[in-house]
Image (tube, rainbow, N blue to C red; front, side):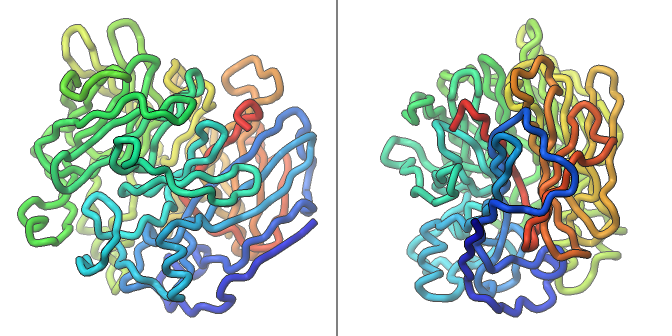
Length: 484
């Protein structure tokens, strides 16, 4: 069965590179259960691969940034060797207001705040909560979140209907940033938010019944812009990194992100259910971190694996190359992250850090059943040498041997953040498959591709052709059968 719903079939977005070419938004919500298949779909796994990302509906308010687009979730549901695809906008409160007015209301990341708006979200309460960044599974629901803090939205993982926002304030919390994390062992959802005014950070835990069982303030020296957090069996790890808004300009309502290489990075280790005033801070070399790989405990040490950026601001060479009206956005979106490991010793208070791999990779994922536990394998994307962010390949890294496997997509095809799908009755950490959505600019149709996790360099086992394009996006999740 195939169904579709068209939204504003023609919108001229101009020449913004994040609204044209591979990044051009799609206008249809479709459901397809009969897809052309090249190869054979494995029958020994099941679950739902979900991926969130920006898909702008109306003409932008002003200078559109890739992070501004309305959230759209794409899904591939696998069961008994069959697959169905669907895509749906996340119908946030802001999305519904703009739909009624048939235009964009909120300024974007590169615009000047409009303080006349009665309602706004984000860490300085001036952006639209577009819920376009991450998607997490908790208590049988998909939780869609916004990178700069918002309400968080519950979606039905089967039909992608938006069920409503999580009323955080009524249960005693504030907002929720993207990269909240679910501990598969306990069902806990761990989350944080950050703000331009005190308290500069909060941290909380929702149990498997969605009850708020811990919420506490985290003391920071000023407004910060953390992107991720991590957890182990007993601890949560929060970040205070030296890239944040210029404090002097922020007082004038100017949001200028600045890197301060003279300031140390700090990582706060806190017992999961403890008060924020018990957090222990560990210092490390200056850097910025968008994405965590995993974290776990080894004796007296907490191990934290990340994709680390040592130079998070654009170099003069990059700025010169990427000029023009979109040059600043393009330059700031150039990522130079590598696999990096920290060890925080809870007895001595010392930090050790080392680079695990020199490849430039990002958007890491693992077998989610190993979240917070010792893990060996992680799955990353490689970045194309293009002005806009595109993922031209996939990488599997073995942190024990420091070996890696790579796969490059054919010219004109670009992947998404992968998810690991375990085989039925899987026995080892990488006993399963890797799933990714693909943007095919030659066919102008999307694809769902399945790779063997043991050796992704062999290429896809099968390619499922979706009858419309799947633009690049942000983060993903895999709904294990036991979580449906």
